[in-house]
Length: 232
Image 1 (cartoon, helix red, strand yellow):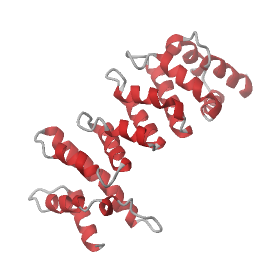
Image 2 (tube, one colour; image 1 turned 120 degrees about the vertical axis):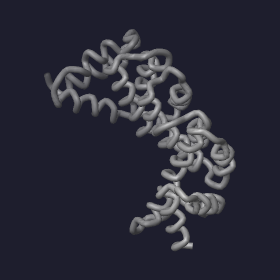
Image 3 (cartoon, helix red, strand yellow; image 1 turned 60 degrees about the vertical axis):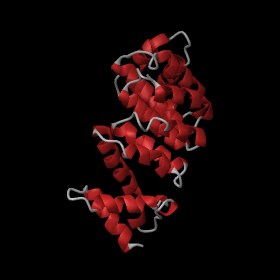
């Protein structure tokens, strides 16, 4: 089958509004061979199909129930494509997916990246709005949302959560350090500039210095404090 024929089959399945659960799209997508993968990549690169991506994600049922692994991979690809194309009309769907209690964890991570790529105030606000509830990769994305939205006030949002006790507070501290390291690493790359998070709010420097002074301080805290002292 020619590449054009495969691409047309995929496009028709993607746009088939009767394909609830994406069973038809799954069937076409699983056709073996590099030609199918190439045709699917061409579909995802077509910004004119973003509206169809949104409709297909809704038809998949990913918002409300567990879906098949193959359908989930399709949804992940569609979410990634929406993020790359920065398709503004997808904002409501992405917000629903990010906040969805039944949405698969990997889909939510892809959604978090799409929201971060969008970069507008609404998307970053949605992303950072679940700081106190997230863990793992989703927590890191929520933190990136908070810093990107307003680096001068991210501390006001995050510090009260750091003041809590328990496993989540410790995980949050480690995630904050990982995120802040982005500012340090950018400052170390030739020709690159720091993201300005420490410059926007010196309280992060004070906090990292305090953490670095602890008997069992995280390595990242010591590294950040040392780099900031050397570059003050």
